[in-house]
Length: 595
Image 1: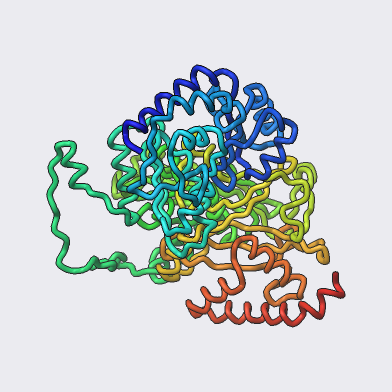
Image 2: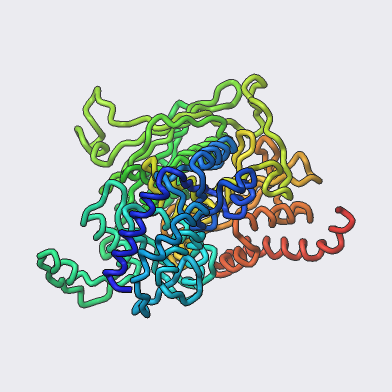
């Protein structure tokens, strides 16, 4: 339709809504799939209904104002995130029928035109529609089938979605739909403006975010329209080189050789480079360095624009320190201060493990200081005497294998659950997108690497989750190569009913740098963390439990074998082949008799 008709629809329809519908209704957004919401609406059938489906787990309800309030309260009591939308009318509900006749008269002059740009309706997905007066009434009365329309767009080959709004509210749902759709290509999803950022700078930043992902932008026209001058910058006459011309290592060498020159033991670890035991002491000291240049993936973990070391990284540092010191169990860990990663330079790390007490436990502490403080002062040994440039970020307790906590400190025993019962019985689903939305409202900025939460459940103070690396992150890692390191991403424990005393732990190892390959490592431990055997070459029940756990993390046997075969990791390849043969050979023979 014409611009004039568009203005007519917006202005006249808004006037009617304000005069007739305002004050009688309300709307709310619920972080649940539409089918689950419809079941929950059974107590308000004549007063509420589903108004819009914006994503796999984002649903909007509308209806009587008091009923909306009751429904939101009921959701919150069940641990489901729901929030009222700041409107006082009920779009896409039966209340809209009161204005049908008046809108038909007011919008009768609207002339439907053949669109020059493909038009995909959220009222009637996948159909050609006439945008006449009748359509713009149905657009206000009918359910918004946004998710279906996005699915049609993806199926038709569209791969760029830009939300033009004052703040992005649909991008998460679109990204979820894109992740669930096997298009075989990357999908770009971005917004335009944000709450508190409504100026040209934010708009251009969003355009740049799309541009660097391959979306063409006419920057010349953009700058010219605002009276800005531009000039072209010549590129080098040779392709970009990915290898440094100058040596990046010190004259001391690298690895074991470099560590030995300083009396340290080299650590094959992405955060810590060396360890040593001070003379006359049973302590262990580990040192390392972090920076966004060497750990670029950490930029995906920020709070209000400041990149912070993730909490799980503190756990990994404690685990590594405990492994070196012979106390591999992290019994306690308290974070004292956030560790900020500067945009330029890096931070020095020191992890100190104290001497063992009478029970065999050791205290652990983690300090850090910026690079510039590490080389200041006399002789480049730090700040002057009396100053304390090191910041204490975490303290904790490490325990050796087999040491039990005192009975009074153990707390209530968690309910056991079988790996076959997933999700656990009685657990209430929580939509992950609601969690990320809440994080964003609080200032947490999680990028793609930290956007791997796929499913979430709550049960009596417990939280169960399925976490996997986004497909594009894994693909980027595979293209980057395999620099084998030991980062900790996520783990899941499954208990097999046939072996109630054994917890089968499956860890999905994630990247610490862009050159790290994801790997899968399997081990069996008892309830106190003591390794009980190699589950890869174990019995049929063990193999089945491990495969089930891997599948819940989104890893199939073929995925793991293909990655390991590509990298020539023969010892893993052999173990996995043994696992496959054992499982296939015993599946039909043992499964029936063992239930």
